[in-house]
Length: 324
Image (cartoon, rainbow, N blue to C red; front, side):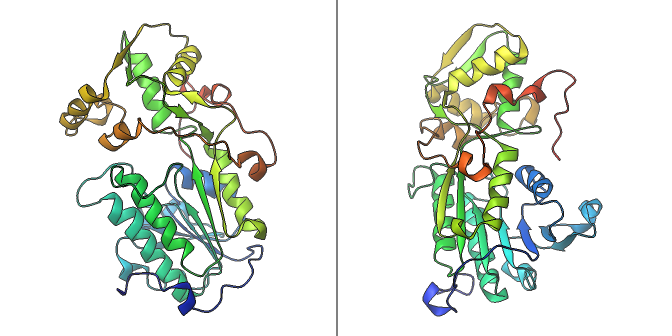
């Protein structure tokens, strides 16, 4: 076994029964999209954020928030970073590969490094961000990396909870804002594929609340939860919801995935504003339904989750569309 691989559960002290987390929480990805909303949801709790460059986000320091430099792909940089922390929330992931950052290296490998350090530091609670549809399928490297990360967490011997959200929406998101950009910009709205792929969009604030619940509720330990919103939408139906919100009535044209793939590949060097709103991997995953009949969102947050059409006013002109 390599030095960077998690120790088998049998080789470390028994994890014991989970208890509510009251101490400091170590957070990876705490400056990202979900991370910003998580900081808000965990307001008042002592946090330690893993960041690449603490000086760039020095404004996040407070009486409750510490910053520590490190990178999940560099295990040496994590040494000691979790000392004194009671729990870990691991959010770091990428949605596109590039510059040596592969899904496997960042998502699976990065999680293994975080788990190893959590074991060494004696962390007693681990909450993992995965993705709805995570599975060991080489055709979908992103989902396979998420699955591999889950295996590392489940085998660590630390009481764990795993969340698998569908597509996440909220101010500053990428996916819904990208679709809104298509609706605004083009005289004809392109629909990739048959438009029937199912999604269960979930509000980012509700995902953050679920993570908070996991820290408070020991009964969530050892559980994997799917997180979805109030309704299942086909991809084309989501475009219709966005167009209705923007007051745009435009014709649509279906574009086969086989025709879109070379366009997406060739557009990689272009500025983000004029690239297609999907990556190659996301284009492949449009063949996979992303909904679940077992969504636990309502149970996690104690109320019905929000519908997409009720939660996307941020795409309207003049609305606050900034991340926390």
